[in-house]
Amino acid sequence: QVQLQESGPGLVEPSQTLSLTCTVSGGSITTKYYYWNWIRQPPGKGVEWMGVIGYDGNTYYSPSLKSRTSISRNASKNQFSLQLSSVTPEDTAVYYCVRRYGLGWYDYWGQGTQVTVSS
Image (cartoon, rainbow, N blue to C red; front, side):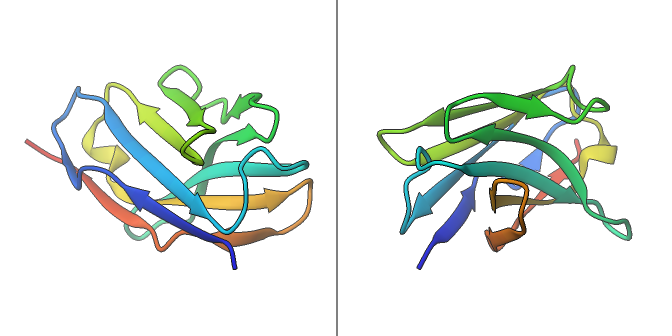
């Protein structure tokens, strides 16, 4: 059974960098052809795809967030991470790490972690 677990600060000050880590168990993040995503949902709004790191380490980002987003991985720990810079209160959301196989379904989700941007 694959499990994903987000971790990181629940409160970030404006203009700072939001950093989250997703720890994966039950499957390797380097296994072909899995893609490891970050998705967020602001309060009262729909989900927003932020970016992805593939089994091969390649990354792709949402055009609207690309300038502020970085996704990396630590294969030895089976973790991947999100950094979002220059945050504002509009970045307040529940952040999810999510697995996808190729172009198929998003099949495994973390439980989500609430991040609030506030001073």
